[in-house]
Image (cartoon, rainbow over all chains, first blue to last red; front, side, top):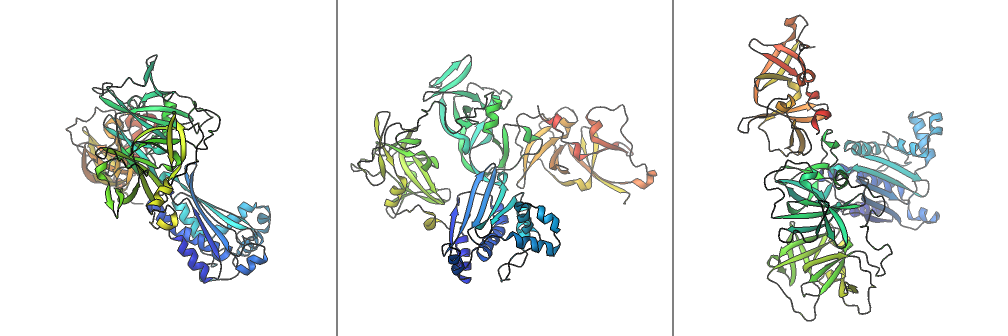
Length: 487
Length: 151
């Protein structure tokens, strides 16, 4: 999303003999392509403003006790159902007196009104047509058109824009765009022949319930099924019943089904569905006003085949299942030990590596898990790669001294790690568990690509550093090197 | 103000209905629908109209008429309402009719007799007496109402 800005900033800074450092955060925040088109020009305009009006010349900055080079920061993140974009600089800021004077000259407000305005209201006047506080016109900005056009563009896509500024300290522009037009990763499940999408934010894990071992892990409490998952009891809710779908033939006697463990409003539920399809990036579209009152759906999306699929709302489903909200421990399951783990590790994904040893990878390094056949892996310049969603993903394995690569015939699981646009996959034999290690991480014998060792279930498990493993095959996971794909 | 009222007309059972032609964006074969659990049968599902997701209103269900047999043909009208586009499913399309209001001395349409209750009451804004039948003019903004849509 930021890919073109380094150039804009560099060119502009050079032409004005200013020194500007650009920082970009949240490049992976994804937006609908049409939205990106709509905000491209406003964003460019704001970045130009920041450099042209905001950042002072190096001499001026030194006089004011600032570093010679100015900073422009672009941030994008999801919050409160909105995509937030911030453009801030540590430049000269906007002089409120000049805004007052200009507004007065242009008759936008009376002296009285201006005196009563809060600084926030005053700053909003910037968005009125014709108002510019620049003393000098350049070919880039200061012509008084622009901020009103920026606001019009943001308004048109249902967003809002605000500005705050401190004289001599800098300016920050905040843009909020509704997330209903955003792209989110979702799991597609099937229930009675219909597909539904579950946002991955609320997804914890998937447990197959096969007819053979249907009773394994499932306990019945007063006719209500619960699943015993690593010492935690998770209520099982059947999606068909929750949606009050009419019973159709053979329901309840399915040969196999899947339990999708969701977390919302601080609780976990196991949602029983017929089938798991795949994960997909979906564009969230709002439902008609009347249907938005159905708490179990948060929207709908259009699939590749043109059909509409409803998006399930984990919080709404939990509530409909009659499970009360739990305000606390919204971030973790209740039975976890309350003390901070001594290992210094958060939750880790425990896997069996392809050499059959046990490895773990910090959960925050895991973007996705993919089941593939080992024969899908191809070789390119001596490295393993995998065609993945129209791109090529480099693969790494835990380096083994013994070199006894085991089952190369069957299936493998690819633990996908994403850094910006860059993907790298760790090939493992299978996924075993997700745990929060209680033991100390032992870093005494460091090996390349291995953070250290830790005891999990009294078995030695090596914790993988996927970035270092990637470096060992020449893949550098930093945005500067592999960015550039226009999002 | 023009005295001509132009209507797109269509049939459900043997009833003849009309909607002001400006409110009908297009007519198409029923697209594949996705059912929405937890709604009454008046909500026929969701359809994809060139990337926009629309609610399907089945006029039979809206009028409490028996459901359409599965082999029975139907057609979809994309109708503009206050709350955006809606896909209205009917049995068959009729002609576009022009109604000259000036002929009737400023009394353009009959109103629904008071004895008619039920869903017609809220939906029909006027009755146009054609030679062989009655044409009921519908108010598209009344097609979707919360209380009749959710179970």
